[in-house]
Image (tube, rainbow, N blue to C red):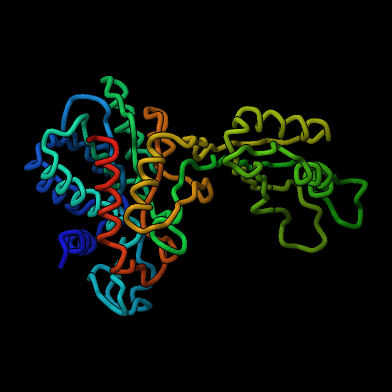
Length: 375
C-alpha cells in the first residue's frame, strides 16, 4: 500500500463531521514536525485550525484544505460503513475520500518526498488546514487568514485541495469562484377577503412586475473567466393557507451568483432601484455568503498545469464554475490562489469514493508543482 493511500485511509477512519476534527490535524502535525515544520494549532469556538510552515523566506507556497466532512446521510444506504475505508471495484469508499482527505494526504506525502529530495529548497512551504469548511465557515480559514495578515505573513501561492476534476484527474483547475449573495424580500400589502379586492392590497400582484424586471435584468456580461452574473428566485411564501384570503405580505427569497465583473454593493443598489421604481413598500435583508475571487493565468496555474501534463498527459482547463470555497478568504491575503483535486462526481453523496488509480498521481502532481516553484 502506498503512503498516500495509507494516510488517506487513516484520515477517513476519523469521523470528523463538521466542525469536528477528531484528531486529523494531530495526525498531520506528527508527520510535518519531523520535516521541519513549525506547527500552530489555532482554536476558534468549536473549530480546530492548523497553520504549519517550513522556512522563513519567500516565495511561500501554501497547501490549504479541510479535515471536516459533511454528515453521512442514512448509514443504512451506504454499501459499506462510511468511516471504514473500503476498497471495491478499484475505488476507495468512505466519507471524505474525494472531499477532501485524499488531497490532504497527497499534500503531506508530496511534501515529504519533495523535502527529502530538496532539503535546501528555496522559499517556504505552508499548510493551512481547518475543520470548518463544510459548516458556517466563520471560525476556520477566515480566522487563520486574519491572524496571518495581522502578523505580516505574506502568502505568494496557494493550492486548495478541493475536488475540481470532472471526468479525469487533471482536467480542471479552479482559478476563481463566483460570489454568493442572498436577499430576503418582504413585500407588504393589506390582507382582506378575496371577494372584496378593493379593500385589500395583494402583495403578490404588487411584486410581480418588479420580479419580472429583475428576472429580465442583465446584471453584467461576465468576463474572460466568468459567465454573466445570475439572479434566481428560490422561494416565494404568501397567504394564510385559505383560498379566500388575500395575503398581507409576500416573502421572496433570491440569490445572486456573481462574478468579478460586479460588486455586491452595486448589485444591491440596482435591486433597490428597481423595487423603488415600482413603488413597493418592502423590507429587504441581505446576506453575503462570499465575495468572488479570481487568479488570472500566471505562474501558479502554469506550474500546476505543467505538473498535471507531465504526470497525466492532460492539458488542463481553468474554470470558475461551482459554489464557494475557502479560497475566497485566502485570496484576500494571497495574490495567486487556485483549487485542484480529484474528480468530484461523488462528493457529499452516499458511497463517496475516489478511484484508486488517481491517488498516487495526485500526490505526484502536487510534488511536481513544488519542484516547479521552489527549485
